[in-house]
Structures are given as structure tokens and as C-alpha cells.
Image: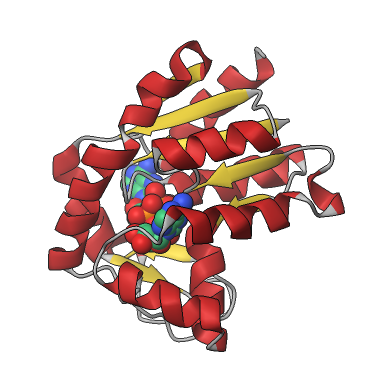
Length: 205
Ligand code: AP5
């Protein structure tokens, strides 16, 4: 299955992507995670991406497209994949169309008022990449591996507002671009209920 998951920053794309990829045994291709990995390794790509990400702006299309093209050419993508955070602009969507067709576009819809709280109160594990909301945590360590949890550098209130503006201006138009391929699920529900709705969509394909 070749899937794309759309949604505003904090909609729960990453949370659902982990479940979907485990259930359907496909690789999770998150451009945000790929950039963060490059930033933590100090690569030239990471140095370039950091200035855009920290300001809540998009990394230039040609850089992002090149990175995804390379990733999709690897053997583990032959039987499908889940794209998370890409495409994010119409130009990226056109670039993807040249590379491959999609079987389904999932859209996780969340009220904008909830997004700010979800992101500014998100904590991530630098070791196992677990993602949590502070309301579900008893302390400041990862429930899965015990590592001290951290906050993403772009999860400040100011940057989140910039990211939401960018989403509304540049990424939301992709819902119309993909038209009837888009299946929208209610992302305001608890994560397990959102996943049930996604599974129902995917089983019906
Ligand atoms: P990226 O990492 O893709 O960030 P994003 O799209 O802003 O999305 P997030 O990771 O913030 O949120 P999410 O929807 O995955 O939510 P999550 O599951 O974590 O991109 C970061 C940056 O990289 C961009 O700003 C840009 O600069 C750059 N970039 C990336 N791709 C690019 C591209 N294609 N082109 C150009 N630049 C690019 O959940 C959020 C929180 O809510 C968590 O705390 C979670 O525990 C909680 N939560 C999740 N689901 C629920 C639920 N159902 N109910 C209650 N809480 C929930």
C-alpha cells in the first residue's frame, strides 16, 4: 500500500503513522524525522534544514524532493510506504506524481484550538523516538526506555503559530489537490479511536 497522511502540525500524523506502519508492515517516511536525524548528525543537509525548521518555515522544495526521491528508490519501498509530512506544497505533490502513484490519502482533521496545546506540551524521546503528551506522563523519563525526555526545538508557541500559518497557506490546499483520494478521519478522538477509523478506511480499499 502506498499511503500519504496529511494533517496540520500536531494533528497526530506521527502517532498514527507508527501504528499504521506496524499493522501493514510498510516503512514510515517522515521528512521531519529525516531532517531531525540530519540535524543531530550535523550533516550539510541538517545544517541547511535547521535554519528553516527553527523558524517554522518549510525547507526548500528542491532539497526536500531530492531527499524523498532517494528514500523512495530504496528496496524497502517496493511494496509500499507511508509518507508523513511530505508532500507539503503543490510543487512537492507534482514532484511526487512523477515518481509514483498513491493508493490512499489520509487526512487527520483536528480543531485548531487543540493543536497549540498538543504541540507545546509534546515531549519526545531522543533514544527510541517515542512521542508523548505531558498529561499522559508521570515524570520526565520515557515510559518505553527510561531515557530523559526532551522538547523539540520547533515546539515553542511562537514557532508553532508560524507552522500553522504555513500549513494553512501551503499544505491545506493539498486536500483539494488529491480530491476523491482523500479520506478524512476525526483526529480529535483518542489515538486508538483515530486508528480504528483509519483501519476501517484502509480495509475498505
Ligand atoms: P514535521 O516533523 O513533519 O512536523 P509537523 O507536520 O509540524 O507535525 P508534528 O510532528 O508537529 O505533528 P504530528 O501531526 O506528527 O503529531 P504527533 O503525532 O507528534 O516537520 C517539522 C518541520 O520540518 C517543518 O515545520 C518543516 O520546517 C520541515 N519539513 C518537514 N517536512 C517538510 C517538507 N515536506 N517540506 C519542507 N519542509 C519540511 O502528535 C502531537 C502531540 O499530540 C503529541 O504530544 C501526541 O502525544 C499528541 N496526540 C497525538 N494524537 C493525539 C490524539 N488523538 N489525542 C490527543 N493527543 C494526541
